[in-house]
Amino acid sequence: MKVTVTTRSGKELIRGGLELHDSATVADLQESIHKRTKKYYPSRQRLTLPLQPGSKEKPVVLHYRKNLKEYSDGNSNNLTVVFKDLGPQVSYRTLFFCEYLGPLLIYPIFYYFPVYQYFGYKGEHVIHPVQTYALYYWCFHYFKRIMETFFVHRFSHATSPLSNVFRNCAYYWTFGAYIAYHVNHPFYTPVSDLQMKIGFAFGLLCQISNFYCHILLRNLRRPDGNGGYQIPRGFLFNIVTCANYTTEIYQWLGFNIATQTIAGYVFLVVAASIMTNWALAKHRRLKKLFDGKEGRPKYPRRWVILPPFL
Image (cartoon, rainbow, N blue to C red; front, side, top):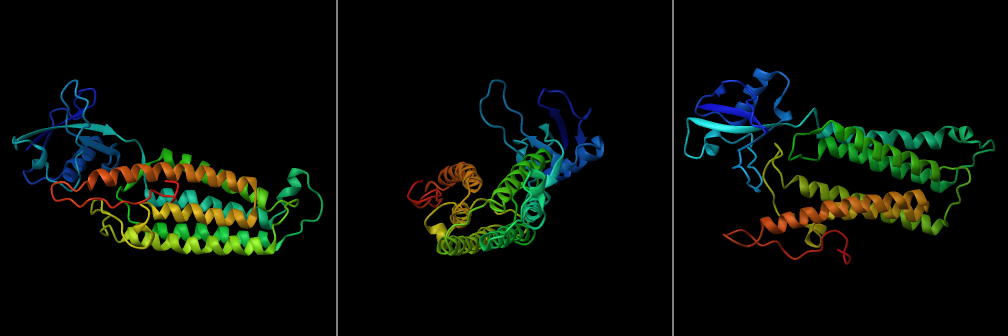
């Protein structure tokens, strides 16, 4: 089989094309492109079928596990694919580890070290019990997230653009320092003991629930990360489409009830807005896939993320 690889401008990426055996897969093609170009390793490649001029349809993306013949449209001897460079890539585990490690290390600096002297405060720093519990809660959360990254999550995509590392780290690390600065500040005024206990207890319950939601999502995918979209079921997923985001939002609500800072609530609003957009997109995607037609199950009626609001 001869495969012609072109760029989106129509220029041949590999002059003369590639000769592959008849049983070659898309993964074999990606390896061959890598050998010829050296620069474009498989996870950096996005291969699609060419579109007719003027077409407004989305191009068909070639799946690495499928045989090339499945995309040849009856002509098993020739195939043309369009190549796109996705840029430098990193694994999702590397991405998540980097973004979660920052808050885990930054927050204790404001608790243990006299950083406020550099902001002009020279007096004695009295640490309140709520500040200590907030440290434990915060570190437990991000340690849990790192452990889930390596031992629980199964990713549908192997890699992410390298630029996302800098963007996500800027988001998590900046908010980590912003919240830590305010919660551990010498002028911080703690809430009542009852409010603190209610907030942390509620937040911890949501953290445990969040972990269980991740276990349920993990079981929807095969160990190789594939398996396609499935309807999540069980526990809070019987009520909301994105129970994992719901518990994530509520666990930060618990933290803010216990600590009561503007910085914490700003983070909560921003994070909730981001996760709500993700949840709406996933909800629409699942409803479109599971429409009850042609033997497909119909997606059950559920809230999206935050009952009774969405």
